Length: 84
Image (tube, rainbow, N blue to C red; front, side, top):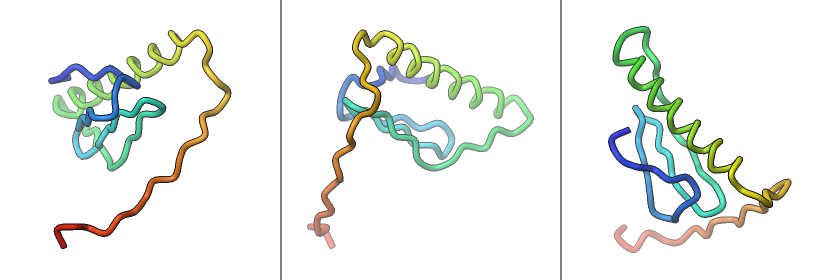
């Protein structure tokens, strides 16, 4: 990966792998979009980036001593676009 991504470390980091957007939060990591893993060197590169990302998420979760069964996700507020 081109930048260091520490899962669950903050509310600001966003990473892109292909057209997949990975958003870091304190209580979750959200993946939206898509990534096409073609059968070529470019696809292999993307697959390895995705593998590294998921491995880091699993490692962070396994390191938690008191991991809850589930986390209640708060609904997001929708606000009017001030620039529209």
